[in-house]
Image 1 (tube, helix red, strand yellow):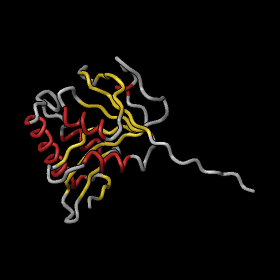
Image 2 (cartoon, rainbow, N blue to C red):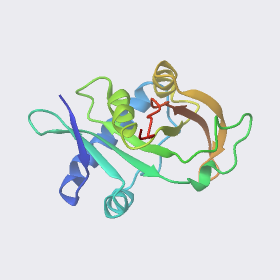
Image 3 (tube, one colour):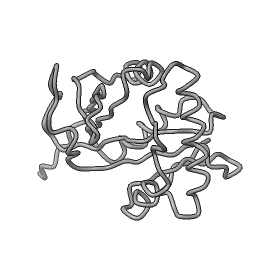
Image 4 (cartoon, rainbow, N blue to C red):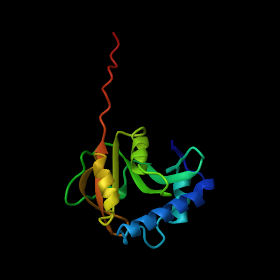
Length: 173
């Protein structure tokens, strides 16, 4: 069982190892244009931790096996979407920088299930060359919404998924 918790400064080396492994997997699966030029950097990971948006998953032996950033609130890169539209304009959380050490399958599902405990509305994006992530997102019910652009101007395919919580009757009799 993998347990997800906030990332700490003690986790930085293991987080960077997860990102290195993810980068290698991307290259092997034909994705040579995502996570280039040292992205995600150690400085970005440190900032994620300082801002409280870094999360890690650890297995039974307490080995850190996955890392990601989960950011609630408006993502500036999502303010403009082309070739489609968002499913809704409700408050949302965004999953960024998901990577693993490659020892466990189903990492996106674990991440998404966890994030849905924090919000009902999730967005994520990935590079056009990242077929494994596109397939995983679609298989989990994410809908392709269009194209967004990163800070550096590079395009990403944007996805969104919402869950409907059962209505509760707050009326007292």
